[in-house]
Length: 316
Image (cartoon, rainbow, N blue to C red; front, side, top):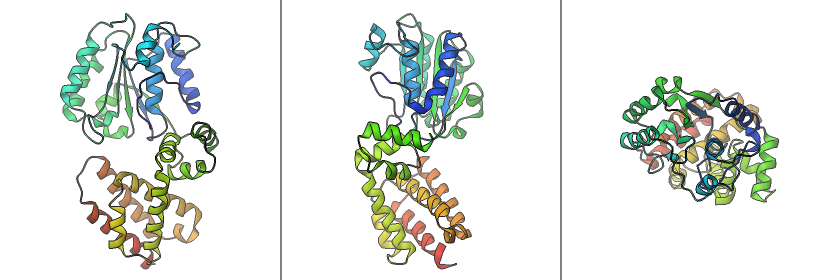
């Protein structure tokens, strides 16, 4: 739910201050040639990048937003504008390859077909492998006029220091709960699931919306029941692993980390158990390994984790 979509986009309510700064830079002719928008997934970074691109490409911009009616906006709404390029992995979890970056750089070197800006969005930036990152440097070091490159990054530390140093950095935070709750209630048309969805999504509104729309909340509640049963020694780690191995491992590990963070803040007995923090470090390591594309045997992964999880409390 943090992706780039066809059609016109508006910045989200919690982007208001950042959006004002961007418009000020545009109005004063101070737009950098490269921006890196970073922050947690599920808070609308790519939507902000898309809104910015459309604002720059609109030929009749009004009130600091794309007008939605001019020829450029019609092309954007149709999902095709010759001066907007979006580069992302061919499949989720895969790399962005050097050939794709070279093609993008070649496009950026050409004159804008609509006579205005050229904009490229790379999402997520950390999906570029080393060769692809090196290929991008030429465009960053020798930028063309009225050309903007936007890197969207969930984990900017995975981008090379050289690339990070050539981008103006914009770090977005998870919105305050009231703003997230109001927006999610309005767009989802629900009240009963909003707070639970935000809790499971660690406050990230677009991820929470995805959970509501996909019915994933039921899967999360089942998962939570499994790990609590292991914690109480009511379910063996082998049987629990069989159930957990059917889930997307990256998402389930995020659920586990969120569950632990909440448990630490709400349960004094958990807070005082030092083994909990060692286990949380292990969860973080496992999650980083999964999202980096490492291939693992899910049954074995969950057996090892859940065996350790049970020991967190049995060793007290």
